[in-house]
Amino acid sequence: MNRIRTAMQSVALGVTLALGGLAHAADPIVIKFSHVVAQDTPKGKAAEYFKKLAEERTHGTVKVEVYPNSQLYKDKEEIEALQLGAVQMLAPSLAKFGPLGVKEFEVFDLPYILPNREVLRRVTEGPVGKGLLAKLESKGITGLAYWDNGFKIMSANRPIHRPEDMKGLKMRIQSSKVLDKQMRQLKAIPQVMAFSEVYQALQTGVVDGTENPPSNMYTQKMHEVQSDATVTRHGYLGYAVIVNKAFWDGLPADIRSTLEGAMKDATQYANDIAEEENKQALEAIKASGKTHVYEPTAEELKAWRAALLPVHEEVAGRVGKDLIEAFYKEAAAAGSPIK
Ligand code: LMR
Image 1 (cartoon, rainbow, N blue to C red):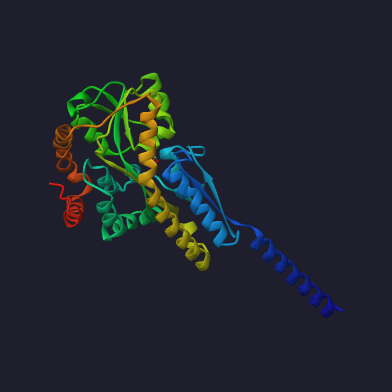
Image 2 (cartoon, protein in one colour):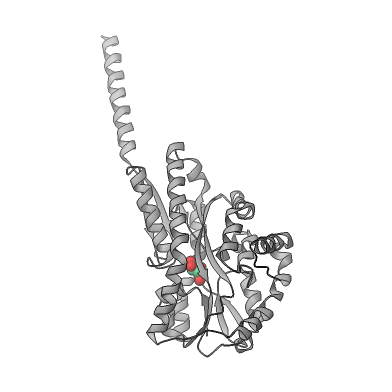
């Protein structure tokens, strides 16, 4: 009798375990992907594309929830949320890693350090880019990829054709000390502010201007509250796609590798669309008639460059002289030397 009861109990236990296993298998692995820009941007679209590929290729085992437009968190909070595991994936701009203690990423903010996308690609896909992502590991973060946005234009509530026109303007910047230095170099007054607050700050005059690639400017409607923009292309804005390391390492190996494949393809997609998206956004800003878009002359562009290049040396102690040199080397190898 006792033996029968024991046998029945173990059958029952087996069924429970099997059901438990099934229930577990039916529970998707959820990746919350938070970001601060609109859905209709290179980053917003690439996040959606990653979601599609990840869900398709894992046959629903993984569910990706994308939260655009700072719906969940603003700039600084989202990185904290990632470290705490409240979200699993982000793609902050490279200008936002300083507060995390990985200030080397600010090298990407140096004015005119990336002459074109070819040099950018050489950096991000080579040992320099990989080395930078590896620095995140000690912060509990794994860096998966670089996603493009584009080259920044300068905007304000008055014409800013030449660098000296920037004097005295209050300019919103991201939380990068290099960008702070850049604005001070132009005798403007930098003010760090979360991306989600920029529109209102421009509208109410809390700040006079800002810098962003056209796609960010247009999709946040900043062009409605800026009278002027100059196509300086003085700096680059792109992203590192990052995940919570403990979460990522804890995934079943086959799932992780499927997701890596999805990320690789989403990265290709992001980098394929970014330039065109920005071109179209610039055209849309012009067509709106709200912001006057100024294309600087060759002589004016030279003046912007001359005014801003000294920033490289001034911040070398912060971001690393060797790192700056490594960027110069890639630029020279691509036939577009910086100096
Ligand atoms: C900004 O804050 O201006 C950008 O980093 C926003 C973004 O994510 O593109």
